[in-house]
Image (tube, rainbow, N blue to C red; front, top):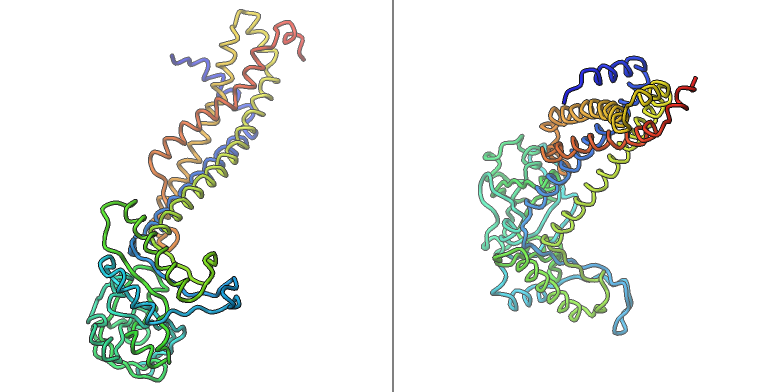
Length: 416
């Protein structure tokens, strides 16, 4: 039931201590504000990493040759492991019915590419035609590399958005059919692609793997090996198949290259399913971390509210004594203090809540990076925050209220 006298008392108490109430409310407001901003960032991180993961093929698995960390069968550690065409073909033959797409990958950084007076340095890849599907590269003009390009070692190239912008002024269609020079070798541009993987992927330049091997004396090196398996009916089935495939290949490569079975550095494989799971767990941990920071900040504000209520109780000791002498029950004294604490906390908290939501609403459309995408706070989180505010106000006022309820009238009336 609405009690106008109770609210008059609350506003009177606040008006007598405006600065103190403002500073206390500000600490609560800033705590909620920080919590909302942090949760918005956490949601933006979740969206960003989810989008990054969705850009890649979920069933993709890659194998890398590294350096051994252990001696084995008389061979010293720190050996560089390079995969060979024989390794690659053996995997293709053994898992022919399971593999959907496959491609080796050789890479060269800083490939100087020129067209007339324009030039730039990009990342050059030697791949097979399936690389288009392995890396989610979709064509905007022309075509991708073909099997014939690979078979006859054609000097053809597929360019990404950055080379097109630097060399051809962004003319995607006009670039097809032109000749560019990459590290002193001429190539015909047969296609232009786009990849939503981010700015780094925009700098990729693709030529046939066979051409790369021939030009850069890498005939006995296959580079990185990438595969996708045929789709599965469920996440768990796909993950199990992919991990089983990875461990079988790794076991085979360990044996062929004489790498210690327990050496995890000589041969490495990475799959997108596991990466996606790790990213999800990282986001969950980040969210809990941000909640922790926000709640601790809010607690400092609650302590401030509790302290001011203790001061108010001290200042109103005589008044409380008179109330009790006239028959006021402890319950009514507790309610009086709790109402004031909840009012200060809730109003201050709502100011922080709406300020945080307002800033996120305004800034969200402008934040679209590879890491953070459109930070926002779900409605359910905002509702939880409101309940948190009310609970925080009750906690802040309970200790002072209990203290006030225990004041004996005779002692209070003697108070100066």
